[in-house]
Length: 359
Image 1 (cartoon, helix red, strand yellow):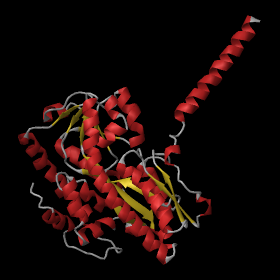
Image 2 (cartoon, rainbow, N blue to C red; image 1 turned 180 degrees about the horizontal axis):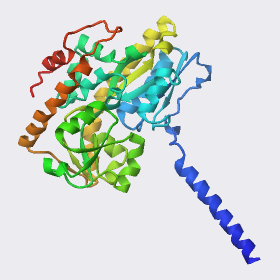
Image 3 (cartoon, rainbow, N blue to C red; image 1 turned 90 degrees about the vertical axis):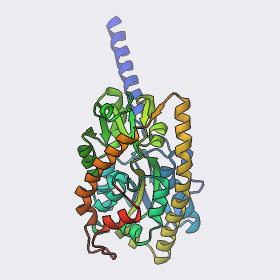
Image 4 (tube, helix red, strand yellow; image 1 turned 60 degrees about the vertical axis):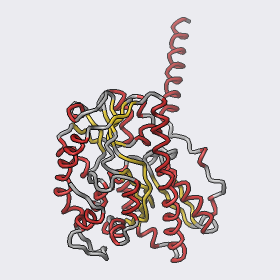
């Protein structure tokens, strides 16, 4: 009798463990962002992916676009927005997008270079590295339009950008000098420019998809993140990495891209409305992202997170070294494709001059 009870108890415990594991592995809930309308009657459906948390303004933009597009098209287009890496990591979803398995994506600027090397211009250090500089770049006309066409040669069109703040280092131990930084195993994105930059800086990068970061940080596989204060605070990375070094070497962007064949299948009037909606929402979201960074830094400081800056002399060293990344990646940024209407001899140089970049 005792043996039967023991076996029964073990079965119950196993079942309970499986239930708990399944619950822990369940996808995050989107209940608080459910649409206030019934999307079942939409003529056109667009599945759009993002890897991060919609409390971040630049990520939330997907829900704002969904609701505004529904209103402007009188319920003809429904964007089924999937944040939280629900469809996988960015490189994986980029492949799905090109094949048409998903119709859209707000891809991070760092990962975007896997199919659109020209997008890497915004990742180059100290070039477009503030909210004001980003606004200037967006207002540049032909330079920004050429930037947004970076993936058209692979059947993907870009429409606009939202942001998530200024890049720096979230770390487990304080980083106040370059020497401190050389002791850190920094997680960086699966991105060509970032890998090149960390090589010329002489640091110790670990290339890793964003969904793998929480476990890697807790287990000590990495002890630092190349990311922004907004993202680190909202996604709770500061629970482990309690220090942040403010470099402000680049702006974090989400680039709103869509499968060209799917988009071209829409009636002309809906194409026009679609583009206008994405752009109008992104203009507003970029304004909100400025304030969000200030707010999230304030919240983090109240929770005991310590913020540092490097000395002017050490920042000058990083800037001088980082110019090598500009030179080494220039050929990729300057590539022209049949789909390009603007055909500059040296696009990177034009952007550098426009942004008044001085190494």
